[in-house]
Length: 304
Image 1 (tube, rainbow, N blue to C red):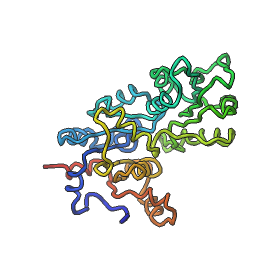
Image 2 (cartoon, rainbow, N blue to C red):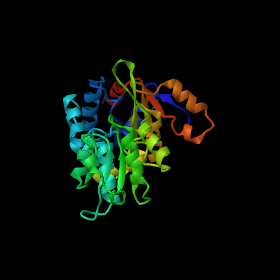
Image 3 (cartoon, rainbow, N blue to C red):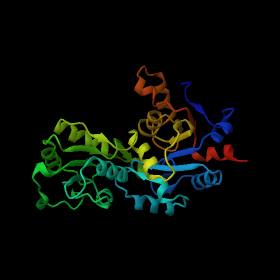
Image 4 (tube, rainbow, N blue to C red):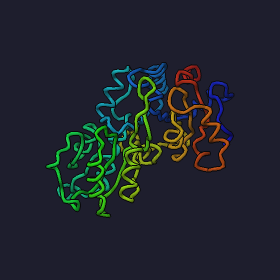
């Protein structure tokens, strides 16, 4: 790759965007920052719609249901429909629905996560154990639990970890994680552990490796084709826009899309420079093709 260049200063940037059929955007750090909309989001999505582009929003937030994600977008004035949104919770439910036998032959899934995640599994007809309202009376013989799914779980505890390990002693029991995000930034600069941290504890304790559903896994890309309503995407004519090198930009590279880093979220240009200087292929895959200060930078490039 020729390294990471500023999109606004790029000769041929307008032509490059005109040749893109599909825009895939991360959400947090790109379109919003917590409860606050980031500038340019509604205008960009409206402009892309007017140009006839396909637009999909992908979120690694494993605690938010599909309905919750749509409510969030509507609350922030983002003009998107339900089929344009894919979250890690919904994609985890789709994965399990395909991987496990159909009911009633399907045993329960033990969930380390909240009601949004549990609700998505239940909507796919899966029986859920655990979740936020976990009761010790839920105890199931380990052989009947078909999968352990790790999400963002603020009630994560030693007893939940032990219980999940018990189920995973059965080699037929699947281990999945909604996303690999190691930490999340909170208002005031606080940092809290993410799903990736909880998954790491369970992987060490169970001597198992989790299948990751969210970015950078390619499964989310496959879900666009199955759920988006417009069929498969040609990655050569698609653009991935995100704020995190290790999830969004790596996801774009894994799926064969061109990538743009927006500097309104987690990753910085200093981190990009470190990846560019690395000898490791894995690091080099995290170097975006372009960067923008914010998604508002796209607007002048999409004008008539």
